[in-house]
Image 1 (tube, one colour):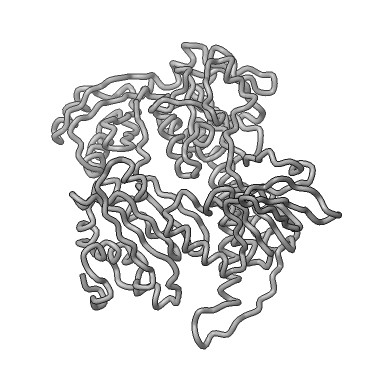
Image 2 (tube, helix red, strand yellow; image 1 turned 90 degrees about the vertical axis):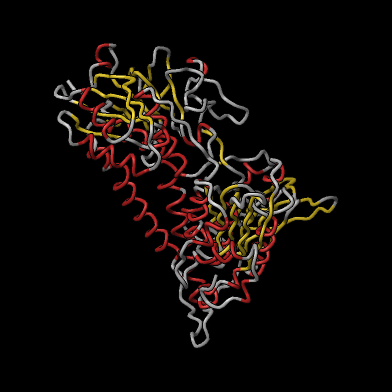
Length: 550
């Protein structure tokens, strides 16, 4: 009989410690699998057969300089049967959080069921990240061809076949859905798919298509959906959301976007580059309000240069239909009232957790003010046998967060571990051109926490890679603790900023200083050099340095 054995391991100091332990333990008889997801957790999980020797395991750990203690043993495939349960873990939802959780639980030897009523793959691959970034990249290529930045390269007035572009997008989505989701059901035999709408019942039960399934633990990973504001006339007039906008059969001549956050800005610029007249309406004082003011101001200028009209501090009073293919939007800025006539309206005012009609009240699972499922630091709901992960639990709405929280929730549910999540080094990227990429504290946040901070704002026009690429738009803002030099935040507006923010992510995660960044080698003529140059600018005038000098 196989078992899952959970150990507490003291003395690990880095990722290499975990690697050495895994290699040593995997050589022992009776050890089928060793999992140490994060050395900081001080936890290791073993899948063992009857031939394993407890003392041999503990002695091996000790010989490597660590102290191991077995804190839990769980027979695999037996506990569920003994308690009359169909599954070890039932997961409601079929997106990134759900599949990450299912894979993790399967690796731990659990029998897993995924319950999904819609299309497998969730928001990201079907209607979010993948299709939107595909179209955004296509729009960028289209714009670069028509507006080359290099002397000697003529403008190419290439034709646009929107229908063919959408067809290619759909084929890409289908391929990735198959490769990254549906095919995984064949790779992991412990995971089964149950198609239908789930409702929670007492006693760790799910009702799906009038059939009852039982499980030791349940994980809710139902994601989120576009949130639609109660604007008079909006529903009657008709509107697009971030899902339907990506599947338009034809491009509209004009578009009003309600909401100036990341999604509105990304899709607004994309449609504008394909020739649509775009207006962005934002109720707050600026677009991209979660970003540093210097970044917001610069991006606003770049968008206006692309003939995108921005209405900030502006409320939508009402909407009405005009003729067969038109809409009128009444807007108000202070005491000034005016109107916009457009062909289509796109609403990008955020997303709401999918938590309705799950039967949460019947099983004692509480929700927060925004409809999100409330969880403790270990992703357990107010019902100790039910966990939640991803958007439905109110976590930051990024696919990488959903996947990570899904894995942690599954491990905690199956093994009894108490892993928590630190979001202090969580990066975010807005895929405008130039991109916004940020991690850590803004200047205002750091000061609000009572920290003594110093900042630098470094223009991208000083970065050699940007100069030779003829794209010097943007800036780098670093926030540092004055006393220690510790990096607290990094905020980038630059071409491909999302591709080189990771250095700052790791610096903040590991408590590195500005000097640590300066002392590291950065390849010349790469955008990664921008962060080093920004770090140098705290103490030096970078404009007075030779190439590669520090």
